[in-house]
Image 1 (cartoon, helix red, strand yellow):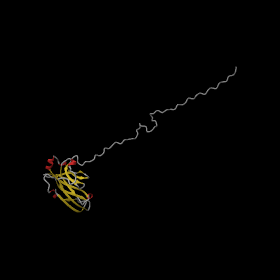
Image 2 (tube, one colour):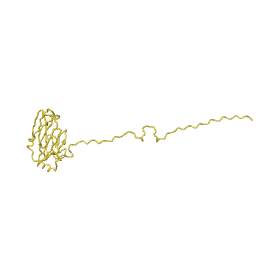
Image 3 (tube, one colour):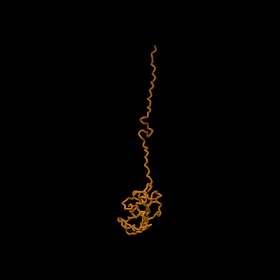
Image 4 (cartoon, helix red, strand yellow):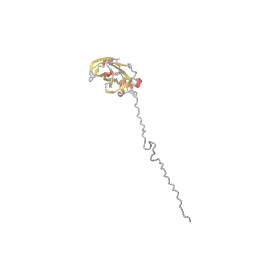
Length: 212
C-alpha cells in the first residue's frame, strides 16, 4: 500500500491544507481507484500531521461488505495522530475509479460513493461525479472529519438509520355533547313532578232544627 505523511504548522481556518497524494498511488494496480487530491480544513493556528495510506483491507474497521452487501474498490486510512478531532473542520477528497472496474461490476458512476467509518459504523459521504478521463470516472466527496474511508457501491443497506417513530393519534378524553358529565339529568331524561295533594273537604256541621 502507498503511504504519505504531511505536516504543517499554524494553519489558518480559511485556507484548507492541500496534500500531495501522488506517492500514495505508486502501488495502485490498473483496476484500483486512486486518490487524486486531499484537502483538509482546520481550526485557526492548528499544527496538523496527516498520514494517508491506501489498503486492500481496512485497518481497524470491519469490511464494508459486512454492512452494505455491495462492491468495495479500495480503502483509505487518514490518520491525524497529533491533532484533535475537534480541530479538524472537514476534508475534501477527489478520487478516480477505472471505467473497466465499474464495467466488470456492472455499475454506473452514480453507484459509486465514499464511505467514512465513524461511531462504529460505515456512513455514506456525499459524493458526486465531477468528470472523466479516457480510462476513469472522477469523483469528489466532502467529509465532516477524518478516519478510515472506503470507496464502494452505494446500496440501500448503506448508512443504516433507525426509522423515526410514527406519530400516534392522541386520544381525546374530552366528553362530547351527547355524553353526560355528571349525574345531572339531561334534557332527554324525564324528571318526576311531585303530585299536588287534593284537599280533603271538611265535615259539615249538623244543622239544628226546631222541635215541632
